[in-house]
Amino acid sequence: MTAAILQQMLATVQVDIGGRGLQKDPVRNLITETRGDFERACADLASHAAPHVAIVTGFYIAGGTPPAAETDGPPGAVYLARAIVELGGRVTLLCDDWCVAAIRAGLAVHGISTAAASVLTLPAPAECIGWKHNEYWRWLLDRIDSPTHLVAIEHVGPCHDSDECFSARGRDLSQFTSPVHLLFAESAPRPPLLRTIGIGDGGNEIGMGKIPRDVIEANIPLGRTIACRTVTDWLIVAGTSNWGAYALAAGFRLLKGAPLAAEMFDRDHEYRVIESMVQAGPLVDGMTGTRSVTVDGIDFESYIEPLERLGRLSTPQA
Image: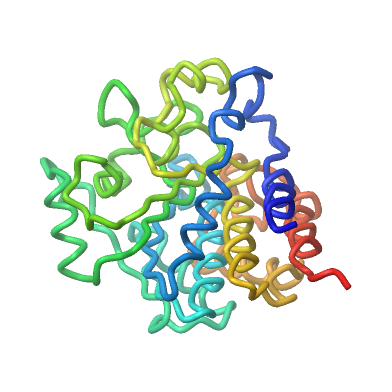
């Protein structure tokens, strides 16, 4: 029964509502290449009595009005943070300086103190010039205890041919974005029991290196150019990355036998969360570049439907 519910949760959030090309090739695509990853990520997170999860988020929209982080990623990050801290886990949210205010605003609406979920500003790109994996890990472990999990939610990562990090339109964002992908490298001197999870929707995010480059090229526009090479242990592909984070939170809590509170699936509550982050960040829609309570150009009514369905799947049946 639980396995079937997890499969339904995943199917709910893997609808390609924005037409990104997640399943353009019906045989090999971003969905087929990640089968089983969602269930394994939920199970591993749930296997820890008190996990310490470091969550990386924030995708810069250089052409936004104003230039800012997008609305996909940060709302999912604070949602997942709440799901974890409510059961006694710890969370450290890692983001660039242009995303900090939005994260703090979202945590406040969720009623989470920064003592339970701390926010750590990543070092600026100019500060990291020439850094290797060990130097980035040294920077992090000088500031926090070793995490059990490292999760990237809608965070751009380097392409296969260079260290450039590309937007869906092919714009290099590396000058705006700290090279936090260094923490995810398999060769990095990271904590031995650390597990990594990537959540993305466009092929250019941290974690997408788990999918062969030719598969991303065959399914995603500009796929060969923008495909991220950074691998994670498990990769969750969703119609929007927020949806993937919602599903991970719901699946984790389902396996813990402690389903999320009804408020977590309430459209008005989630609207307030995103609205507060848009205002405080600011955040902008990644497709339109405007400050609005929309995600990837999707109107809120359509956007919120998968979250409400996750709520129905999470509710114990009489």
